[in-house]
Length: 306
Image: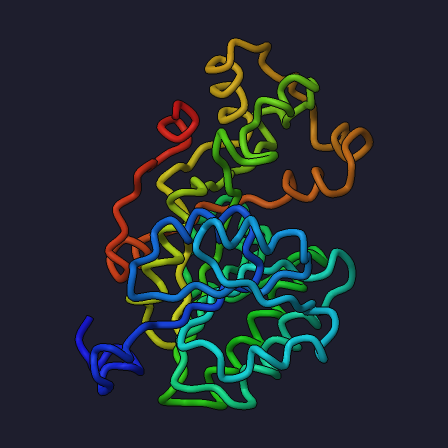
């Protein structure tokens, strides 16, 4: 990487080791760790002391802290040159105090910084099947999406308060899947016989394979433009019912029953119902052009066969 693209570029080569802080080092963070280069020191914030040994085996140095308790985050100040924020917001409410706490500590004493935040495509709300690029205004309709909009605003504030020295890249992520990811493939849902909407009221669904998301996060840390938002989605543009029908055929299972939206509102849990009330098709041109990401799995049909 040219020296003008890294805050360490002016230093002698022996001091140029990048420090990458991963906040929320779950499945995607672990996959990303396997992509890391030898000149990058990986550091992960974890709230579980039991994970220290597991992360160490992956070459990741652990720092114990909890985003819900700001006093435990002091060691993060000035620690890293790059930050990947993967931690989810709290499970309730419309705000994300966790991201607020992280930004507060990063602002205190931080060198030139590049921060990548993995948000959700749910911030767009229901687009009634329209094609959605990153220029579309956010319109969250669920508390879950409102928490992500709040988190994005805190992250963007970090960039604006350190203008010229801090780059913020936001990835808006749809449904993440992988055959070896917990709750990733649709097989369990099909075995439960969970219904989908009938064709007349069906919604478009968007996906990204966990390995491709990890690669997108890694590339965003190095190639992401300042104060830039990208849709981190693959090329799949299928209606939810068609997707589940294809998956059922792939696994050799019965296709799911089809019900009306009115029936779904009575029968399905609120969380699952929320996914059936929003329809959009994500445009991923920036992901491919700006990050130069070549998808390993352009659609779920390739990804679920692995």
